Image (cartoon, rainbow, N blue to C red):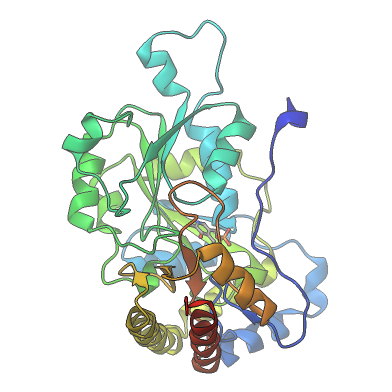
Length: 364
Ligand SMILES: *Cc1c(COP(=O)(O)O)cnc(C)c1O
């Protein structure tokens, strides 16, 4: 069984000098000075002790931040850990002899494609049924009416929705998500890893629907990938179920200190988000001026389709110039390149490299 599984393939993290990394959607800025100080000052003789087992102070700070109760929050070793816990808590593995629609639904994990490539891996590890539902060519969220005519299963035990979507960058309106959530009977997780760059978020939905969870992370927007801190917001019954199956000390102490310091310095980050959104608009305009198609993005990356050159060639030729982006060799997306918004200088270099590549490949 384990021999047949395929592990998750993360974006490359090569150690090449002068490399411009626009491939894993990290914030190009370091954590705020306050956060670095908090981590440094926590790294003393206390390291020999166990951290707070339930990350209680952090849950309380997050509850205050989001206007809910600590019982609505669980913190994980990155949101990836919580997504893995959710597959175990809310879906059953496939069982021989299960044939009714009801039994199958209880063993089904579903998500749209393309979206976060970890979901199928989690479903396979758990041995659940995988229900993949194709997004339309525009990558927009289908309406309930359209989904009713597709293979979407409104009774699936667990549904993952990446919003804003990755890799397309498309934002889904909260009103549209609300309609979908209202028609769902299983647990529905709205994965908002990139929501800090969007115009709206769906936090009101877990407050309204007891089967809906919002997933957040300090990794991408808050420059803390290294520390592994993510969290869920949801009904205490769902949060309690996850809490019962987690490891006793799932969240490391330095990560808890870093996340707490981040929340106390939120203004610092909001300024960065505005700057990244401005650069996103600028980069989009510059690519469109070359005749490239760029989807409207609500994230800290853009999804662009070149003209006069394939996305694979664009990816490769950027790579030769030490600029790393992400190209997915899969149906529907192989014509596109996903580009993380980096610093102003990085984006200038990316654009001038792209213009040079575009010129060099233009038919004479
Ligand atoms: C990066 C990412 C995550 C994982 O975040 P961690 O908190 O670092 O585990 C989850 N969902 C999506 C869509 C992501 O892009």
